[in-house]
Length: 70
Image 1 (cartoon, one colour):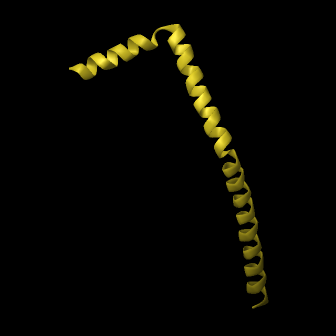
Image 2 (cartoon, one colour):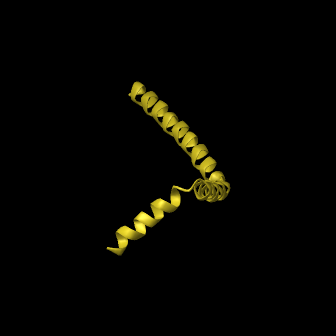
Image 3 (spheres, rainbow, N blue to C red):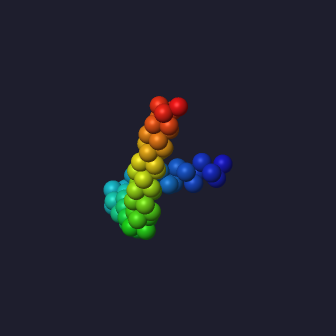
């Protein structure tokens, strides 16, 4: 029973525009911090994937060339 009242209290609290704006600012700050900490890893993963695609294409090229000579 208290779970419903707690949830209702939270919903009532979030209906207030000032609290909603503050909540959005806190979430935006947290997302910004996480992004600043992780963006270098995201770029590393992107570069790794491009490198991996080139390696796969080179292997495919050499495989087709080897099959052609057989």
